[in-house]
Amino acid sequence: MHSGQEFGDNPEEVRETGHYASEYVPSFVEKWDSLIDWEKRTESEGNFFIDLLRKRGVKSVLDVATGTGFHSVRLAAAGFDAVSADGSADMLAKAFENGRDHGYLLRVVQADWRWLNRDVHGEYDAIVCLGNSFTHIFSERDRRKALAEFYAMLKHDGVLVLDQRNYDAILDRGYNTQHTFYYCGEDVAVEPEYIDDGLCRMRYHFPDDSVYHLNMFPLRKDYTRQLMTQVGFQRVDTYGDFQHTYRDEQPDFFIHVAEKE
Ligand code: SAM
Image (cartoon, rainbow, N blue to C red; front, side):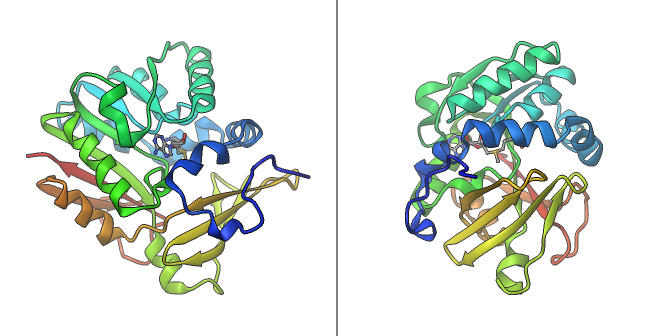
């Protein structure tokens, strides 16, 4: 079955920041959303992000990686004043639909992070970039540019919450000892199909045997932290899998909380 995704003859050579929009083809998005049951996801995340934002007195939040709207809807339901941005129009359309189904009219804006300030206006108490999204950027220049755009859109005491997969474990363990990650139970099997210092090509296998891929940049945890500090964030705390403490090898995800002051 053809996935509809276009990676060309050499998929491992596709290392381009702008490629994300054509990787999230509508059939992948639909499948993802029907299988990753929002209730299960809510259960596994708990109130980690909501508590973190409330504790800081956050009111306005810009969700820069809205995707199909999971976090934007949770933020709206928790009473935050949220704006939902994403570079993919297909994703935003799905997010708006999902929002409406849950009883919320999301305020959506199509914007690529590299030019965020051009398309989104205002200043926010917090920016969230969740669901391993920042990994889609393939050059260091673009990573710095995106983080600088996030920094500029935060109020003087604002906070950026950005998560990433634990690529250190994948890179250090090596390609041969693959670990299969299961999202919310056993619905979708995700494994790294190819890995080097500049690419992690993930394979998503669905129960109907359809297969999709995403090409991502394997961000090392300390490298992400360092970039955040370099663009001006004063303090960066890193959590593992929604826990306040972590052992390096263990978590599948890291969550960075970067404070502007
Ligand atoms: N946060 C959502 C979630 O957790 O379900 C969606 C995560 S999805 C893995 C990543 C999202 O980031 C996609 O919707 C994609 O369109 C968006 N994205 C990737 N690179 C981007 C960029 N340079 N500018 C804007 N959006 C981007």
